[in-house]
Structures are given as C-alpha cells and as structure tokens.
Image 1: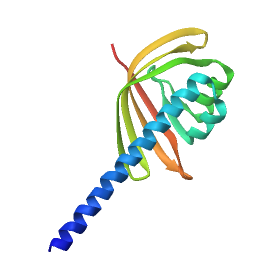
Image 2: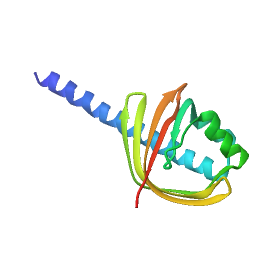
Image 3: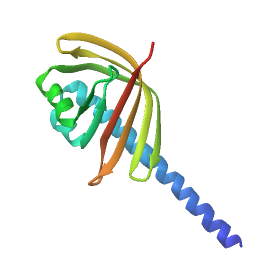
Image 4: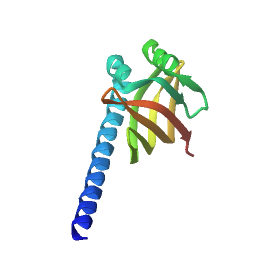
Length: 141
C-alpha cells in the first residue's frame, strides 16, 4: 500500500512539475510575441503565429493570420508598446490558456490608439514550438 501511495505521489509531483514547465514556456512565448510585435520582427512573429490564427481585437474586429500579419507588415498596424499585468497560464496538454491585463499603444490606420484590456491568448504546441492560435481582447474602462 505504501508503494502505491509513493508511486501516486511521485506521479502527481511530476505532473505538477510538467505543468509548471509548460506555463513557463508559454509565458516565454507570450513575451516573444509582444517583443516581435513591438520590434516589427516579422520573421519571429511568423514563427509564433498559428496558420489558423483567430485574432479578435478589442474593437470587435476579427482577423485571420493573413490579415493581421499583413497589417503589421504593411505598417497599417504598429504597436509601440505592450505591457502585461497579472499573467495567469493554465496548461491543458499541448495547449494553454493565458489570461492577463494588457496596456497597448500604437497606431492603427494612421490613428494613434491606447488600450487597456483583459486579454486571453490560446497557445498550442505544434511541431515542438508554441504557436498563438487565438487572441481575444476586451477593453477595460
């Protein structure tokens, strides 16, 4: 009986450690996304975005990867800063949900914007790396 309890304890500890490692990897991918967007590093950003990305802006506009990425590449959308607050990552196997508050500043279609929002990102592990599959932001007052 003790052997089974020890085995169960070791398995649970391993799962907790794996979840923590996944959460750390996703948090790093999130930081890489924000850095790539602000720097205009299109090569890095392309590697971080899932091919079937669903990107819902705080304005309610929904875009796929081609449209969102195209606006960034053309300069129609430019982020000057992205600051995360209160990041929480919940791993689910080869996927994870990241939730936080975020402050974003930039220019969209020639008009400056400043947004404070709650943001949810869904990250999926594809081909051994984390990809942003979904973005949803809701403006805060």
